[in-house]
Image (cartoon, rainbow, N blue to C red; front, side, top):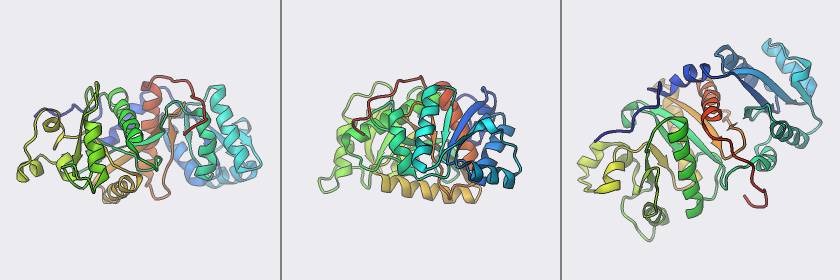
Length: 324
């Protein structure tokens, strides 16, 4: 069985740094730009040639205090003074809408407050977090995509279809995988009426997917391990046989399962056995939302992945914000 090729120049997720560093340096805006860790992150991304300018939106005194703590110089014109979190979110979206901003990095601001305004920049029906990871114990350590561990809370059939589409675009356009294999995860590989995620996966598998091989339900081991497929004597044909054991994209049936899997992978990375990077797509510019528990490498790799997405995903106009 031939696996999907690694993206050009990307053998492991950490290769993102060199690839992004070869692209034009980006302008980043940080709503709530008064956290020292965020300023250290951007300073590191600048050292790697990924970031050229950072706009810090928020309380100017707090921004200058954070910059002094980190020891980085911030030009007055790069501080956008605001008096409340709501104004910070609004000014951020105005800066993006005006052009000249390549990436959004969520800083010291409530996610719901910021996301209410981010919807004004929505370019797709569903905004979703797509995570690129490698982990030595999973799929032989080759890079995989996971969705959605952090944004989409209600995953009905339409939402899952959108998650598949968003992740497939990242795989094909950002990473260069020409026809990704998409596994729809559940607790069982056969449709069971009492387990709705299995029947939903079966219906989604029956849809026409011109740019990907999509199949489910599959348990996690049957999605990533050819040995598990062999040992369990699972006999599949066609698309199912191409996906089982060789998935490139793992689509979880809901936020809870996706987030649990993400946190497991996060713990693996703490032992130096893997790497993570995430980018939120469906917004006018790539949007990076980091967990406070993410390590420094994950934060920097996420900026690098967002830079690639900015370079390789086609520009799309914002949609109306009457529905989410």
